[in-house]
Image (cartoon, rainbow, N blue to C red):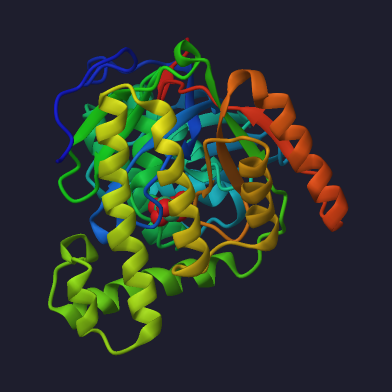
Length: 378
Ligand code: GLA
């Protein structure tokens, strides 16, 4: 069962022609992932949707190969021409310029002003939102004819090769391809997509996002270690990727740690497919147990949760959520809880009070509705 068909509203499948524009404003969103964690770099399945929170880039073309970038959040302006490496937040911008140029596109110089309401460091893909908003802006400023379907890989390459983060393809795909009111079922091997309707409000439901505010520690090293373990397990099994593994295959692995890591990926891919089957039939409430099983697998087999997110999941479930799970790379970040809309306050209050009891920093909460992917605002 792979992605099939497509439906819904949102960005068109091809960008709006190749006529260069001198000035404009572009936006690209953060995302949550409904289910399918650490499966993207195993050639597996993911099911993210875009958030209304987004990064906005106001951009004007310059007539020289120079980029002058101002970040409202950082309160600073960085100017670069790619003759020297760029570091810090502006590296994500320089990375996109580099990636496009490396792929043969004639990227125009530009003045860019960046602002964002995607919370940073919360596992909501603020980096991908920045990359994808900048990519959209530069593509239109340069009149570059870059099909939407090619953009996630260009943004991912920017992050992998320039910034040096070994992320998969999920976040850049979500920020580019998502459609309002839909989740994005993505096959990370074939890049086939299906826009699956997610009418939460129509069914009286809501997704509560709980930002655990847990301090991210060792995130980059642990992410790379998980990825390396998955690649090693596939290699030992003689398979191209863990996407191709079955549970019985895992008995051929000697190292119990690799078995646990691989078991997470194999069972998580199966849970994505079960979730998709339920969503296609409009049985939204029934995906709850799959979300919770995903969390348990991330906690026990993949070992990427922290006490704050485990507490948020357990408390949300005890307060009546149908399912709850951490979303994103792990070691902190956000939890999603699927709840009756009328129970939103009860569940959020229960989590706040449990955090206070445990002596954790107060969590932030908001509801998530599926928003559109990257597009030009004006
Ligand atoms: C981060 C990465 C993604 C993906 C998730 C885990 O968000 O950027 O590519 O691997 O973690 O699912």
